[in-house]
Image (cartoon, rainbow, N blue to C red):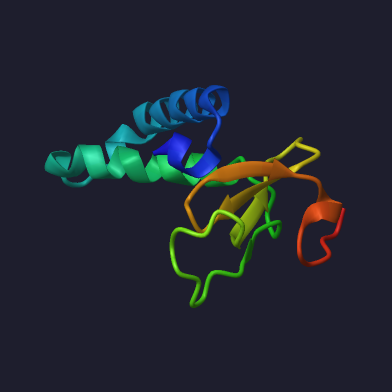
Length: 107
């Protein structure tokens, strides 16, 4: 889950460990023990999203057909990173400098 959001193995491992720790601390709040796995996955997703810079993402994918390796669908910036992660219509992900994005971004 964390890797799906962050696309970085080390950051994903850190996020997963943090999610597990948060889950252990909050275990007493789990009302349905049978829903432990989805509950923990949600915590992991939230932790991974917390590792991105709020307001740094843009979505341009409306009507974009999948498969085009040159068509940008969206981008986001990780906390502490100088580059943006760009998702293309072929679902590949590459790093890009702010000046290489199709729309201006705030530094």
